[in-house]
Length: 218
Image 1: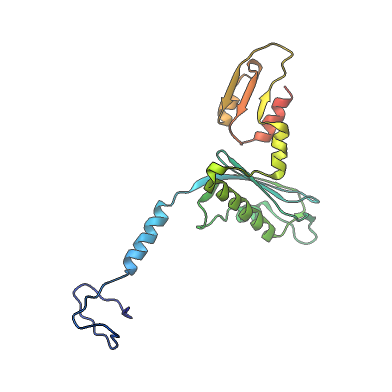
Image 2: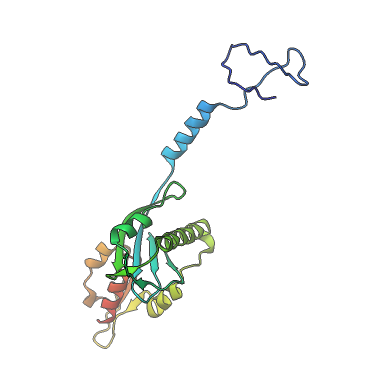
């Protein structure tokens, strides 16, 4: 039987209705508001959060698309909605940033970097922006939760794995160099002398599209 009020150690409580409790029975305290609040505060304080980068594309006449990256993970979210030209109301970068930043207490992520590609005069409902964010975050959470069974990337398998591979073999007609290198960050990549390498393994996603396009021109 649960008492309808709180009692402290050593205090005497008088119950009007004791049910089937026998005289001299032990009474146990089964919950404590103070301990529950302390536990909640401790959980919030020690909750791990991870940085994510977002890039969103909003162009008139196209479907909106969001790319989300977290270290070695990359996911895409695309909505079956065609961006329109705004008649009275248009979407602003500030509004987009406000919505994609809403990661809240229900996720373990925070927005670290962002890029907003917004065509001037474009209109997109805020609800669609929120849906893009929620779907992308959910995909990322599923990938992390199923780390050993990794699968998704999508967005046409990231443009068919950026046209066949992230492993770029530089044209060989010059000299057989036979040198290969793997870089894990864009800073490491920027220190490379491309002309001395035969194969480059890219282990990061920052500015990846531009880097791959640049290397294919070599």
